[in-house]
Image (cartoon, rainbow, N blue to C red; front, side, top):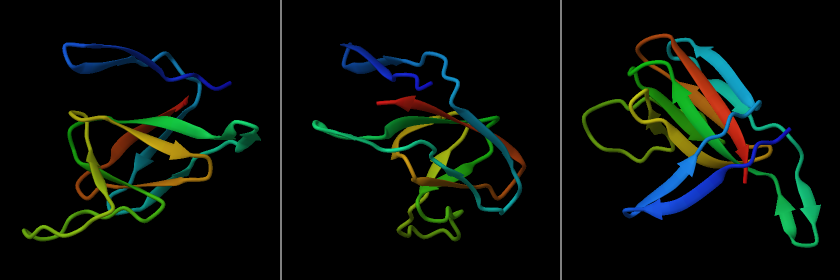
Length: 125
């Protein structure tokens, strides 16, 4: 059963939200330099008011070692001291992320330094 993502009233300019428990949790232990994927499950529901099938995906990792995540393309670890365009975003224990994803999207994960546990929790929007 889907768990609804809920927003609270802004407080002091900060968006308020809370995360009720969801049974839609997906976990994996990443191996070093191995692209690990999660395809967002479910089916798209079309109604008179439009298409439904979006989720807020809360991504958490087990400690502060860096994990790179990309949507619908392979994740990549940065190489070199120069800035370059990238489809990957950084996630670690100090900065969990919430991404908006749709049914059928594929999240890609990679780490360069150590084995990591990753959890993706889905909330219906």
